[in-house]
Image 1 (cartoon, rainbow, N blue to C red):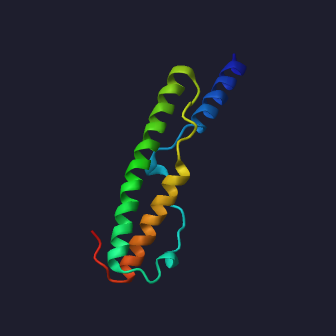
Image 2: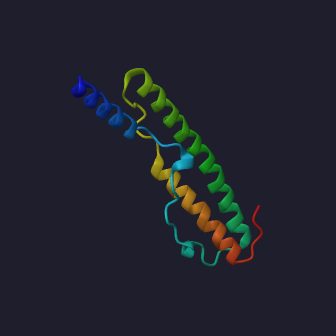
Image 3: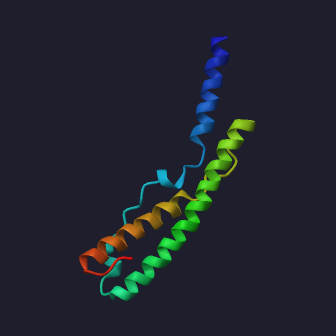
Length: 111
């Protein structure tokens, strides 16, 4: 009986570990501000808008994958989303942070 409980617990832990993370739980990637050297405040603001919009879309997709995995683990015991796109979420979060830092450094207005 103990063996069955132990094996079941190990399988559950493995299934949960394979689940996609919610976008809020993904840390931003380290992105250098040097790629923005020489950019005007207008160009920085435009780029920040593109990054913000992309992050909203990618985060929604990541959250959908995480929710799907939670249901699939509950129903069949196995996550099925493939993990979503956590690398893209992390990259976009890092870009967003780098842009904000550089805009503050350049005294640009941040909307």
